[in-house]
Image (tube, rainbow, N blue to C red; front, side):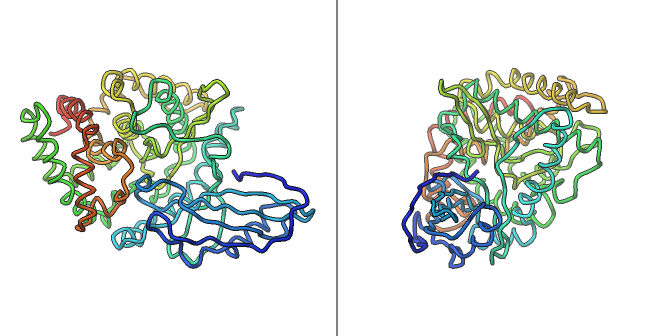
Length: 430
């Protein structure tokens, strides 16, 4: 939501645009105050003109991998002469060649835009029909730009008091349960929507795992595997599972494509696909207690077992002392909340059992390995100016430096010493 302040009797001022370079990124030439004119006329009552305009990096360097996030600050003059200050988040596509080629085959901005404007309103309506006003996301606005792939313009949640937790420390019990409650609410609505209205459009089903993405995924796997395996070899006790792990890594793309296909006999939901600390925002009351939790960023949506989201989130984003020790507890906590919301929404099919959910965490265990290789490593890495998608797949000195930092990180290796035997004991390397 936009941040609003009133300043009566503001002096006449010319709109100024700040398109400077920061953190190595230069705003596109088309990103100007004039671009927002039509949007502001339609969305701001009593709008007269733009007085000041600034677009600057919305996240610290290394905090966003797939896209570029800008914070757009606009001061507008209203017809009564007062000034209103507005704040938005603007998501732009990365400029590297691999990402742009991927976008031409699989436009994640189209997926996210349609999630905000088609799917999430359906979820919200399902809850409204049973008397619950569920806030599931930030607001997403329409804006026309010359960008080949479009952009995503969102309300800025920071002025409303939302913020990320410390991803390096990981989420404690209270924060983890808050996220699991929100995931259960989301998943319940997504399953009920299918039961009542039929399947989702194909765009939302497979996620990134389409044949057009197989080649870049194979390149990704081939590039990160040497650094990843070299780091695992340094972990105490790794010799007990190293042969199985190496064999799995040799065919990682095929393994992940196999588990990406949903089993119609499973209980299936629309997975968020990228539920980790940087995509979760918390709002607190005056006593520091969690008041609300929002999961943001809907680019990696896919349809399948909810344990894919659970493995991704629990392994990447929870505190060290909870990650494995409380894993089964968290699955049960999530299941209890899932069933509660399914019953609330009058889900017409058989409710998933806890036993089925636990079995699914083993059936889809390779999703846990994928999380350990990728998002868990990113979550535990100090802010790094080399952190971006090119860092995972590029051949430059900066990319190689990033992969070394990513996989030799002592914090990451500490978690891996615990996570890897656990995954191995659950058959994730078979």
